[in-house]
Length: 373
Ligand SMILES: *[C@@H]1O[C@H](CO)[C@@H](O)[C@H](O)[C@H]1NC(C)=O
Ligand SMILES: *[C@@H]1O[C@H](CO)[C@@H](O)[C@H](O)[C@H]1NC(C)=O
Image 1 (cartoon, helix red, strand yellow):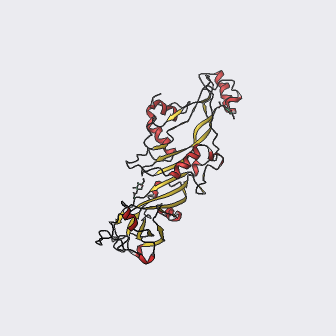
Image 2 (cartoon, protein in one colour):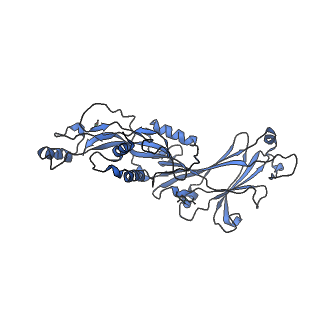
Image 3 (cartoon, protein in one colour):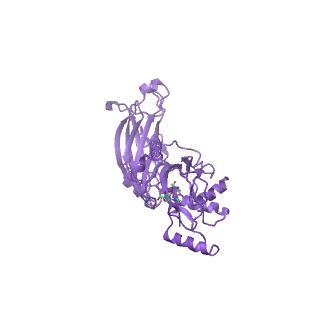
């Protein structure tokens, strides 16, 4: 089947009369129903999919989540059907801040307008990881062993920047050990992130890092270009910041269980029934934004709804009457349509336009049963 025909089968219900030219606008409608304003065009800098997201995706794919509420994210214990790893877009303000000579200062900015207005934010959790990059064992021994971390919310931006104390509020102040593992910090920012969704309310965060030795007496002023001969050249710590945002689109949350793999019989027959259809996302040109799955068994409904309509065709009373009238006047009244009457969800991992990694549960993606309507 050509990609165009495949799209045609995918987007067009069997009874609907439509031109194949319409594929682009149907694709658009379909993407809209997935909560996307268009086909995402992620940039070049692909992010690694966080292992937590892979784990959650595999769990739903295996159907292990089938018994639970499809709109609860059990990993975080909150309601939701969309999990985003929102990328930090802040920049390194200055190698070493003017307010604190031995500090490293970094802006954090998470663009919350990737959430649609209809979505209810249930959780926004900041995840920070720090790793000290050392190139030799001498640096490992001599470099700082801990970091004092201060996190500020920026309340106002003035021409002179957000450095001034009046324009920021301290959210967190903590010391983390840098070795042997990378250090990490997790902070609940749900109410702040909710506020960031309002236009003109997101001034981001400021992260201030002060490297020091474990012994507080030895609070070391590490400076770049330090002239002391014994001190190694200090490389900057690698900072990874993500905001995990769990939200709920209530329109995509009708509670319905996923059936464990429906196996459709392969019998030649003209009667209305589900037919096998594997949608390969490569064939519809979606491979550059969908991470997983690469495709799935979507199926479709096709076949006749003949008179007399048997019970197995799951017809409504109306459909039964329509087949009767059709048998009397085949040209005046069409047969009822063979349409999906039971569908099940799938989960998808994809990149959005801002290169965020998103895991989303979509209802009604797989045809399980058909009926005459
Ligand atoms: C945030 O994302 C939205 C939607 O993707 C975009 O229109 C907007 O320009 C972004 N804002 C910033 C400050 O990057
Ligand atoms: C009609 O529904 C029954 C179960 O309710 C199902 O077994 C059968 O396959 C359905 N018929 C079609 C044509 O899908």
